[in-house]
Amino acid sequence: MSLFTLLLGGDLVPTPKVSRQIAGTRIIAADAGIRHAEALGVVPELWVGDFDSEPDGLPAHLRAVQRQGFPQDKDKTDGELAVDIAFERGATALLMVGAFGGPRSDHEFLHLSLAQRLAESGVPVSLTSGTQEGYPLLPGEAEFSYPAGTLFSIIAFSELSGLSVGGAKWPLDKVEVAFGSSLTISNETRGRLSITLGGGRAMLIAHPVLQD
Image (cartoon, rainbow, N blue to C red; front, top):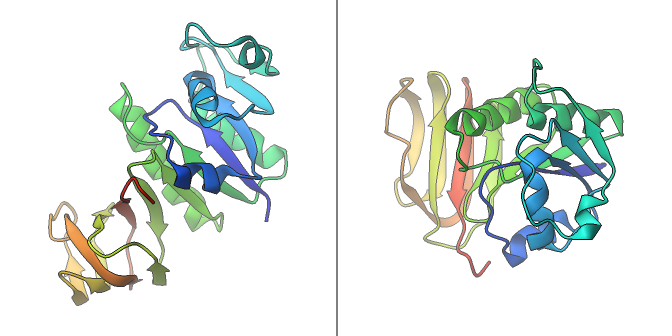
């Protein structure tokens, strides 16, 4: 597996867990996401975008990163262009750092929906801001390891069928979830978290403790 880290323009709290996740990966920065490189102590192999959000005060070693520029008038965001280029360079899995928050909620939603589409096409993908993590859920069973008491939600992008949740304060057993329902918001882990999905589109959003 060739894991690429994409530095996006959202929020990031540089935790030890994020440092472990990106260790040994190939890194591409998308426009304003270059600012996370300094916080993480890494140098991307490529910086892509139209550079309309280039941060001020970048150190010289980051200003010197190889750039691949695009016009401001284009059909894809800088983040999606970074995804395309990662695949061109051999990526088989993606970690999207800085995928949550930031000044543009439309970009944040795009990161979530893009990750879902990629997962459905067979690409392992996860998202993080350091304080939030996202994992697309596909039909079948998935397990996640978090300390007891970790807050999590399951965000439904459609109606969900056959949803079961184990290892949680409020377990579920083969329930149907209407699109737009808050049933799966704000749960807590009580052991190894297991999620089984019969059908539909959803994403696990977890809030790991910062000490992790």
